Image 1 (tube, rainbow, N blue to C red):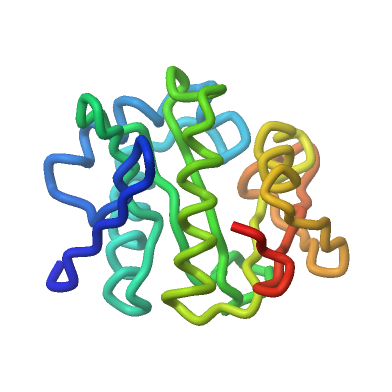
Image 2: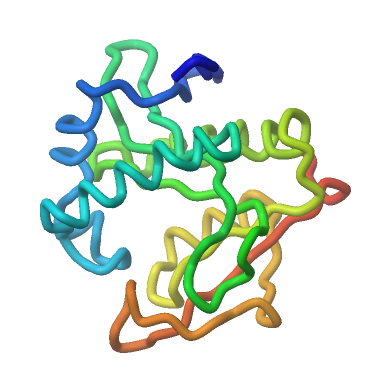
Length: 183
């Protein structure tokens, strides 16, 4: 990528994707536990589509769900970042934050650190007035992080979509405004 995006936090680097990142990312995150609330383990076709979408977000909007790399050992922990909401039935075009980390990175504060940095970037660099986050009701760790970031539930933006949870096919939405963010 021409822009060469890179942003550092205390323990992490958020950066553009490199070709060599993809196998490490998929090995760490395309597991039954990580993908439980994301529609299940992804096939080769779904993985390729996801890669193409992530790269297109960067190209089209200047931001994406960036690689999350741990500073002390350069391990690829997953992704975190920003895109424009494009879920069928959802609040299309709104700035959306998202994250996905491998299991051995859970519970260590990495997701909150990366998400806080991404929210700062959304408001300070990319001019967002509001940022949303999407999940499903069963994914308590995800909406728990949304609440910990100061996001509030936006039932008015919830929408029907069975891509991630066939048993409860509703995507729930949280949001935070620039004025409410205290990052």
